[in-house]
Length: 277
Image (cartoon, rainbow, N blue to C red; front, side, top):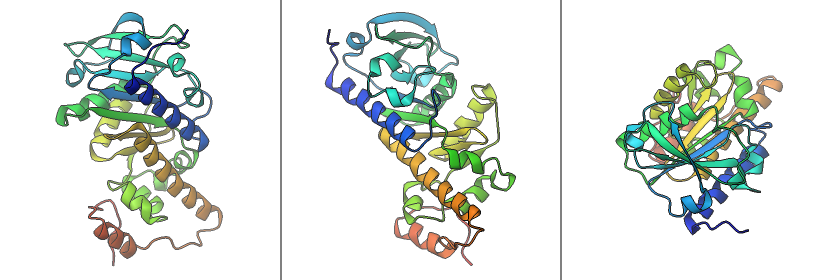
């Protein structure tokens, strides 16, 4: 039986599938690791595609999301499998008027017991962003890119300024694609209130943050694929840095002056960058 879906919902689920596939293609999601959510002003056809309904209490109050719809990956679902059957891997959450109670909609093909274990961090980031920006769409992606995660195990890199100085120096495109740089957070237990709080604060100032010894979270006001692009740029810089470490630190990379020139040419406030001599 074909499940009726609106063109918009079909497009969004396809984008989530593409995003999951790309995250896996760069080895940033082993097994069931990683998660994706979209926050939408409205979503026609959502009840048709996800006819099963159950009341849920959100893990935190999210008043800015009242009346909004969230598409969220289920816990343990492999991101690489979203594209093949998105209705099995994704649930829809309609936030109530009080911002605390909600309706969870799922498909008969649902293959998860609950939403992602990082749902509290996704929800808090969406709520924080929507408090100050009236957006039709906001996307959040968590992944575990190996080179970024590896570097965060090295104490000298576990600092926002130090990390940006090292991984933003390998491609001019990174300066343009990540104009706010990458925020580095201290280690916190996955799914914890400490991680959620630090993550919200970090994503106010950056569009991607690195959870030390764990992974990253990225957001976008444009699309879920744009959020994935940010992860890919950051991971590419980390891969170059890793290669240079293995080679004995022989490469120059972009100088501080060259980074500043790129930032000036594109009108970027590169306060995260080293100051040119």
